Length: 152
Image 1 (cartoon, helix red, strand yellow):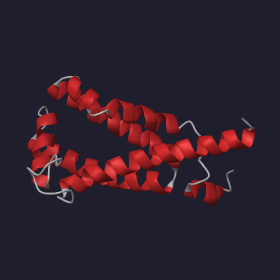
Image 2 (cartoon, rainbow, N blue to C red):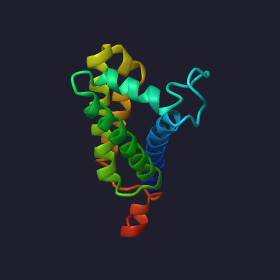
Image 3 (cartoon, rainbow, N blue to C red):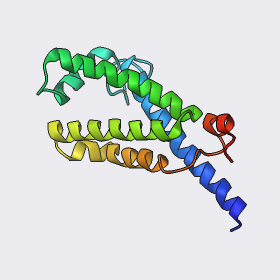
Image 4 (cartoon, rainbow, N blue to C red):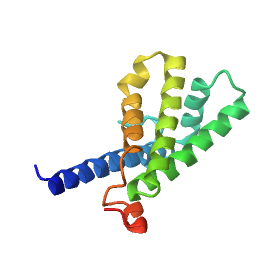
């Protein structure tokens, strides 16, 4: 394979990883606000913020209710910002590291509260690994970073 074809393939794979991670973050947030349907509907995990807050409380029982509430809203805002940044390719290296760390913390909380099967079944650590791998790549040609800094 020629170097230009290899570079293009690498860019497409990185763009796919960014897109998959970004959409996953935004999909989880959409679920919290009932955009995938109401609680109890097929394939809906939370369906509203109340059920998401209860789930967060379950994962953060070592903390006070107030801290759990702050963590739930902080995670929600972070997932929106990280998801959008990944989709458009804005500050990909930083966004990828922050996304990976958020996912590792979430996976660890899930494992601590519910056992290791839950985060493994949800591929939380796989997503964290993909995110962290992205942080070692140069911005692909489909990012805002590449346009801003003339990469590629």
